[in-house]
Image 1 (cartoon, rainbow, N blue to C red):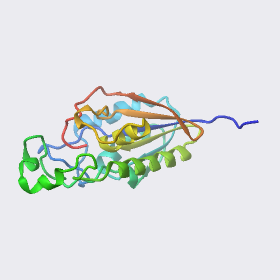
Image 2 (image 1 turned 180 degrees about the vertical axis):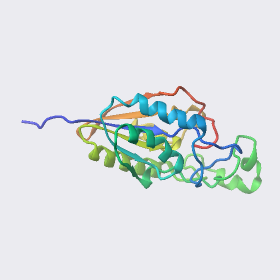
Image 3 (image 1 turned 180 degrees about the horizontal axis):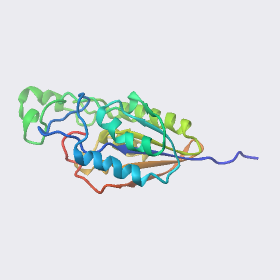
Image 4 (image 1 turned 45 degrees about the horizontal axis):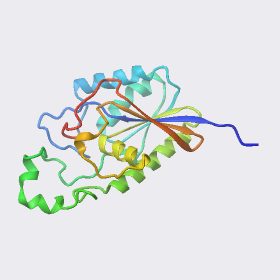
Length: 213
């Protein structure tokens, strides 16, 4: 006779809007906090999850992720954990303006780093991102088994993991990412098996072209 089925949900939450008046790619740089809108987005997400059976909240070590997680932790009277594997992807253009046709991308000295968009050559390999994110998800699933967990992370890592789980190629057009600010990509598990992926935008849609992540 087979054992009973255990349902667990791991929500991948992208952080809220960041205060970034200079419009740089802030990546893993310290000191980038949520904007006033980002703080409101964090509160809205927490309210949307107030009736959920959240048993575990874990976040990237970056300030914007920690601040986004805090209202959920407070509303469920939990302790916030940190997982380094939820951090933003490494990128050599960190600290620069990288809009198309602007800033770093116009400088010939950076062109050698743009030769392979399939890896990508300018930052952390997509497969490495997917694997570390998957590890973080399964750790959160184990802690929250039979309940729900929230993992607060960043646009590229969340989107890369989703494509990996859906069996799609990992390289992609960044303008087509379905991962708005403060959005939830929810992974539904039956025991340890992933059975569904759902996406929601408690605070509404935002442009995937917004600088930073």
